[in-house]
View 1 (tube, rainbow, N blue to C red):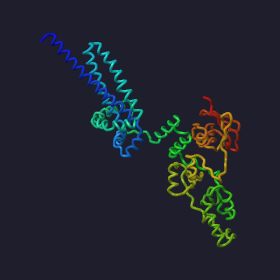
View 2: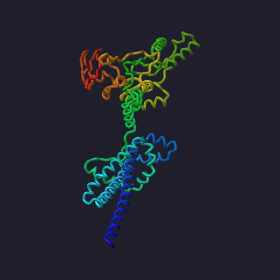
View 3: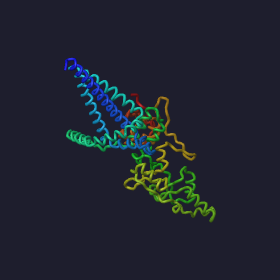
View 4: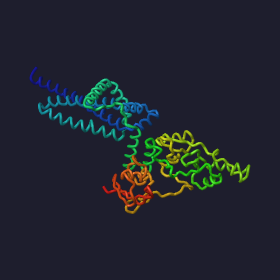
Length: 439
């Protein structure tokens, strides 16, 4: 073989090497782009939307939903596949460029592969996947499902080794850990509100509904000091007059002492009984009416019951009225189904409700509010974030922070707000002015 023939053969061999190696690198870059885009699509897609598509018969969406249920296995398989193709592509590129350019080929291969991987295998596929995550997730679900099954043993071994390393340094990893669904929903609602997609009123109602399980009946009940009740031993005419003058349709009745509730008198039951007696005995027969027999048996619930459980109990018993007692059985207040609903939708007033203004906005940005106004209601009205873990009302919050019952005129600053006590009657703070402090 002549030198020219040898050179020609070497050139042909080099061209074949460049062709096949370049083709292999291109294929590996495409696989890398596939893995990168799949990771973004499956992790960024909404499980709720995928669930909806699966319910409509989309099998690819059902496959994607199953993949997202085991996040550790999914991410492990994708990362393993992505790293394998990236490392192999970089190795082939280094070998090719070294053959073409000698020792400088290593640096050149590093530069070229960095640009190619960054632009075509990372940014581009991930940008596409993030714009339409559900559509992309359904497209890649089946091939990724195959990859996950093939690489499952290796991923499981790597995962076990990683957890062992973490445990050695005092970190406990739980592969089955899940973000609480309620917390995830609350975070999504707050995020969409901050972006302007959810109105404040809608956000408040949705968050209030989710918070019912974390709040107790003691936080929203009417305290025993404001309960309208009547002595069962009073003459029936006086009881009738009391019920007609009240704004409520259900009146607790007590015997011997106001906290000894023996029944709940419904206005309709009383009026039916009065009508029946009037038809048989005339108006004078009302004096012989037995209110104790008309009253319903009282329903007592613990003050630690969650609002979510109590609402379910109301619906199950088809009752709207319950008396709240503490661990010793002492009366603490009363709760109605309307009280729970108001925690979600705000105050519900009808033509018989007494209109009480509990809050008034001042021109300087402050708010004058009654001491019994709940912190939750003030937060919802003003879009504030005063804490309500230690107290339910504004007066309770001030007393808790001051560790005393302040006098009128005293001013306090805490939690980023200024509190001024405007009125105090006996041991109760009845009026306050609240203003957010400038940051």
